[in-house]
Amino acid sequence: MEVGAIIVCRLDSKRLPGKVLRTARGKPLLWYIISRCQELKIPENNIIVATSARKVDDPIADYCEQENVRVFRGSADDVADRIIKCSMANKLKYFIRVNADSPFLEPSLINHACDVATSSDYEIVTNLYPRTFPYGVSVELVGTDVFQAAYEQMSTPEHFEHVTLFFYQNMERFRYYNITRDGDNLSKIRLTVDTEQDWQEFERIVNEVGEQWKSLSYLDAVELYRKEA
View 1 (tube, rainbow, N blue to C red):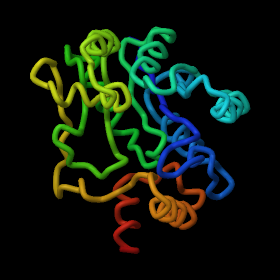
View 2: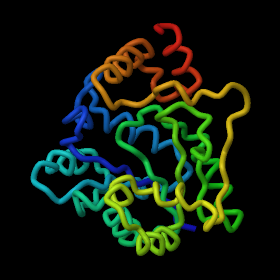
View 3: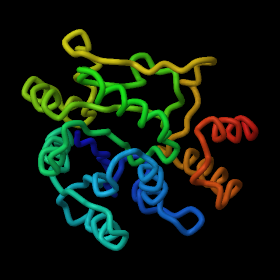
View 4: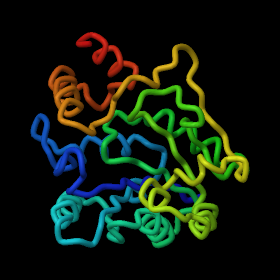
């Protein structure tokens, strides 16, 4: 059963432009996200960066080519359409939506979501309904067919930009499974890179852990975050 990770990104993000190729310890943010995805139990060539076809995003495509990472280019404004076409072009039955501001995504959680989806008839596996994990430690695995059907019913600009919003507004229509964290609710902690302050926190943690980055769990990152807070 084909499952892939689609990393959605662009260079002109509104709050922190250029962040996806901004470097920490000599590596761009996109490298950190890709390195996490490489720990998933999916074929490595099913890790796909989905960016726009605009010239401004050419450096993303160039970086992916340099790193031998697959890239798909599509609509800048209709991100939902970009994801559908990317998933279909790569013959994915399920796709994992990966945001380009989430270097602390947790492979073990996403692998669990893949196991749940591929051994059941769930259409969506998430950990955001309700959210109990930190921001930036999201799991969103969606069936391509159900996403395509939902796309036909999307009606607001927010649906096409925030591509899973339609599902959360209409969850009663879908077969879904929510992963809930045991223990404290950590949903108020930000392990995402969306602002300059977020970047400084990310860079501080990366500098502190150094070569141990790839083995850093989100709980380790939470402890480092709390130590500075």
